[in-house]
Length: 116
Image (cartoon, rainbow, N blue to C red):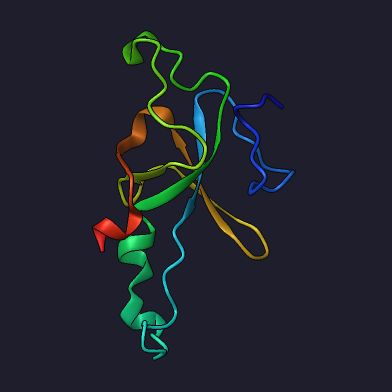
């Protein structure tokens, strides 16, 4: 596994290949600042968590194509925006991941709380 494709946060059995990236949805807050518990139906994880994701792994061929002019657009640890139905979903016993192609990234977000 290359250094680019590895991440401490990524499960050992899951690593991106080719031009793909592995992303993890942002976990929504379960409580307000005042301590009130926010039910899942109100948090609307589907609305927000599906489009703002953290980059956990970058495949060895990602951003190597001439369309990207040799520049890597994202790196492990970045927060990105993707279309709601982009990529493939992989669910493990306790996590959900999204595998997307390098050209499915719409934007990089410096602060994921910005898009609430």
